[in-house]
Image (cartoon, rainbow, N blue to C red; front, side, top):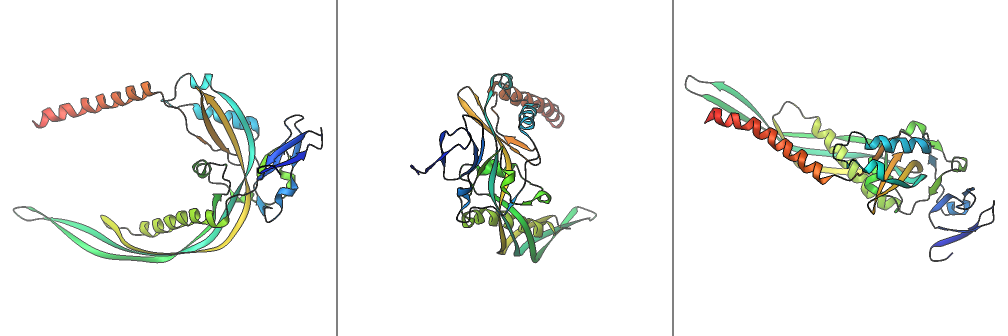
Length: 292
């Protein structure tokens, strides 16, 4: 071990190689031999479940090209001038949380009625106190457990189809990279709790109907984590470079969903903005003349 790096020898060509402490599967840069580093799975690092890759490398490249299409504000030369610097299939560590949320919402609601007298229109507004309480179960709220991966990017490639969740076997790893977790269950649970609470509150809030306005004035939430599963999820990570800036994209290796930020042509953006402004002005002007 050297400053967080681990040394190993390629069993195929004998090259002396180094990897960091979270790398569990990699390939030799000299001969291309795939290597599973079984020693990295010690100390509770062995996943319980895995979703295998369904999409291959070429599919990820094609998906990236399709990701460019239809983007009106994308610089025209971007798709021709940017080049894929790196592409790799990675099994990313995730914690999957199961549990339930007990929630109570106290809300204020209003409903209005209109009637007419001989002289005027009368609007009567009734005010109501509304309470909703219940339990919402959640299954497999997924949170990535790798510091290397951008959380927003990993959230964006969801959802995964858990029908394909399999018992972990190292036989799925050759040909791909893999990372063991370096973010604890406790830290990831905080993110899972936010998602579970928001979902439960939304469900309770959306169960209220028949009112014109509804506002939450008080909420009580208790979240219970019943189970957590350590799993590997398939992700294609693509890195491109254009005008000295790196752009990172990710594709769900099971569903094919591609995400990633793209550059914006500022000139086209302002022309587009001014075009919308001109259209709105053209519509509003006759209305102004009509009323005045």
